[in-house]
Amino acid sequence: MGKRDKKGEPPAAPAAPFNNPFAALVAQREALPQAPAAPAALPPVKAEPKGPARAVVRMERKGRGGKEVTVVEHLELPAAQREVWLKALKNSLGCGGVVEDDTLVLQGDQRERLPALLEARGVRKVTVG
Image (tube, rainbow, N blue to C red; front, side):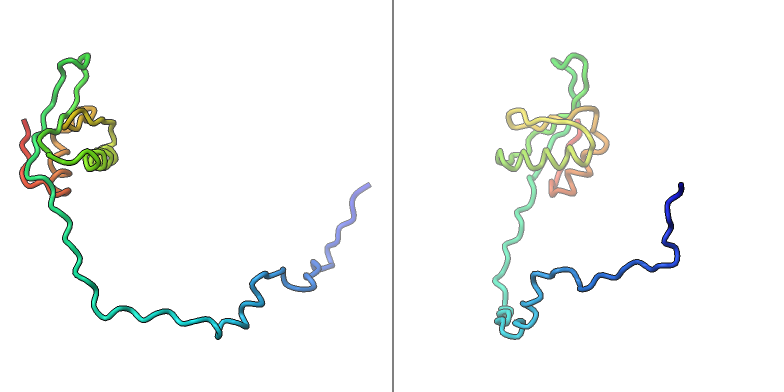
């Protein structure tokens, strides 16, 4: 009551290759227009604005139920830039955070790791308090 095995027979090869919907386009490749030449001189690119001149980093517990947070003040960034900076810092530090008024509030005591990240983003002077 066993099944028959087809050991000696090789698998049947497909009669034709799979349907290629783009096969007809290969013959028309020469008729396609050429890419435009690259411009000779690129216009000068404006340099990215440097980061804020200074930042103050401090740890705070008051009014937070005993939880430690790190507050970054005096960045003087526009609101949209604050959100971008906060997201980048949260990803780099692996912590949560929020924007409160003009400050960035990061969860935990990040005073040792944060100055290097801020300097890498262009802040010229970081004061840890």
